[in-house]
Length: 93
Image 1 (tube, helix red, strand yellow):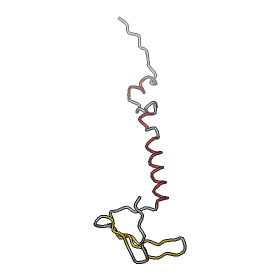
Image 2 (cartoon, one colour):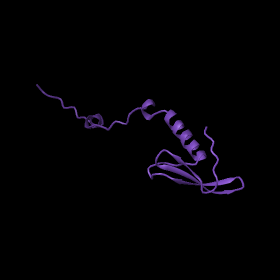
Image 3 (cartoon, rainbow, N blue to C red):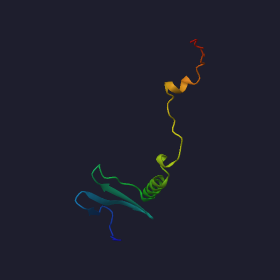
Image 4 (cartoon, rainbow, N blue to C red):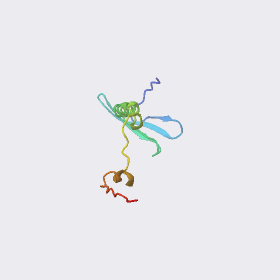
């Protein structure tokens, strides 16, 4: 881990497009200003940890294709034929 000391209005540069500036220090709370492209996702660490945990849980859950289920097949016209009453006609030869 890199540890840097900065005062109010001092900043650090990450790569070519991210700048983090110390805006204010009050007791044990530090306010930071972050300049980064809009496409860069910035998360508080405690929220990021929750997201990672939820994603891991979801990826380990059984997929619906892994669960043995009887498929719901549509009724065909032929399956209804067994319910039609039949009439037996005797043929005379």
